[in-house]
Every structure is written in structure tokens, then in C-alpha cells.
Amino acid sequence: MASKHKTSSRTGNWRKWRGVLGFGLTGVATLISLGALFSILGYLIHQGIGAINWNFIVREPAAVGEAGGGIAPSLLGTLILVSISMVVGIPLGIGVGIYLSEIAGGTRFASVARIAINTFIGVPSIIMGIFVYFILVKPTNTFSAIAGGLALGIIMIPIIARTTEDVLRLVPKSIREAGLAIGAPKWRVTFDLVLPAARAGVITGGILAVARVAGETAPLILTALGNEYYPTSLFKPIDEITLRILKYARGPYDVWHQQAYGAALILVFGVALGSLLLRLSTRDHDALSR
Image (cartoon, rainbow, N blue to C red; front, side, top):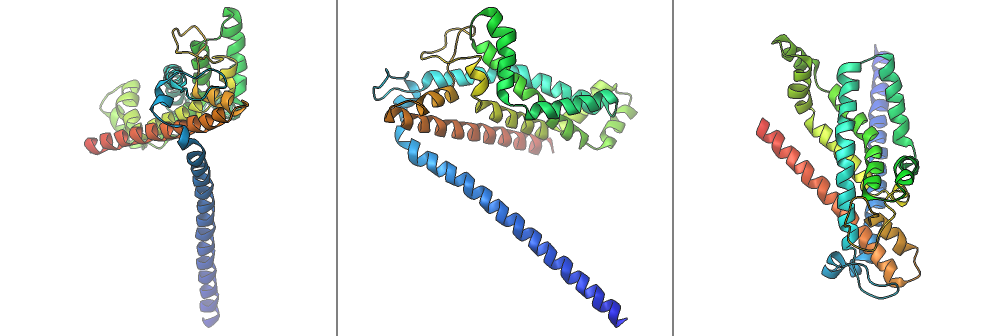
């Protein structure tokens, strides 16, 4: 009995220390990650805060080599491109996620589709730019906001589809069974019960997708191209904030370098603010629904 008690005590102590070690390692990893994040943010603030003022936000870029100027066309172009990408990517992504979760289930086609989605999530974004370049830009012989938004929307589709499927699978089966038990058709159960139950997760997936495409540059070089002026048509080249950052960062002028940091800082805070507002709206809606 004493030997068994001693062995049990040693096992308990080992489990305890193993748990402490696990928590310690995860804590260190978290601190390292947060440290890297805040270091990057601090560096951006230090380098770019001096460039940010009212004129920087509302004015067009200055002539080459001159001080001053702003990124207003880039901000407006970013808003337009992201809006187009949301129109393309969000409905299709959610639709694919619903199909894989609620309709296809465990079929062979669904398995192949999931492999394809996981593959496309990891594909370099410039591949999407090349695809849109050959199917839209080259045939029409013009770069445009439509082409840029389409490329970004295609990038969003697999991200939203994967997230939507995952969160829909977390909805308890009892909710589906309750809806079917009262005679509701499956599509009504999906859209009136299952999808609202997973609303917060679906919105989170949309936020992640928007944050991803808002920082893309490579596909826009081949589709939107960039522009020095305010956009006047969706069928003409359009500027975007990451394209402006790229141009200024590799330019020869110190004022361009500072403005590149300022534009990057605005992009980071813009994405963070948009994510925060969407999360707060989701939380308020869930609180009211309770």
C-alpha cells in the first residue's frame, strides 16, 4: 500500500510540474509574440507619426521630390477596392462554407473541396493577381479598380469559406433537429437558426479576410496598377495605400520614406479600428438577443 501511495504521489507531482512547465512555456511564447508586435508598432509610431497631419490625410501626393502632399487618393482607393472585394468574396465564401457544412457533409466531393480551399489559402497572393491579369486586364487592355477588387475578393473566398464551415460545425445538432422537428425545410433551418447561431464566428472570419486583403500589394501591381490622382472610374487604374507605401519606401527621398511609415501606421490603425467596431457590434447584438 505504501509503495502504491508513493508511486501515485510521484505521478501527481510529475503531472503538476508538467502543467506548470506547459503554462510557463505558453506564457513565454505569448510574451515574445506580444513583444514583437509592440516593437513593430512602436517602430512605426516613432518613424511615421511625424508625417501624419490633416494635410497628409486630405491632400493628393506632392510632385516628385517636393515636401508635403498626402495620401487621400490612396485612402479612397483602398476603401473602393476593399468594398469591391467584400462584394465578391463575402457572399461566395459564406455560401461555400454553408454548402460544405450543411449540404455536402462528408461526401468525397466535399473532401476534395476542403483540400482545394486549404491549398488556396496558402497560395501566394500574386498568383491571384496573375490569374485576374490574364482573364480581365489583358483582354480589356486596361488596369482597373474592378480587376484589383476581383483579385482581392478571390483571396477572401477560401478564408471566409473555411472559417464559416468551422463555426457552423460548432453549432449543436440539437438546434438543427429542433427546426426540422417543427416541419421547417432545411434551408430555413440553416438560414434562420444555424447561421444566426454562428454569427459572431462568421463575422470574425470576414474581419480576418478583410484585414488580409487590406494589406495586399502583389496582386494589385498586376491589376489596379496605381494612380497619382483621385479615382474617377472603376474601369481605370486606381491607387491603394500599400501601393503608395511600396512606391515611397523604395524611392530616393527622405520625405517619401517618412510618409511611407505614416501610411503604414494609418493602415494598421485603420484595420484595428474596423475590427474593433465590428467586434463591438457583434457583442452588442448577441447581448440583445439574450
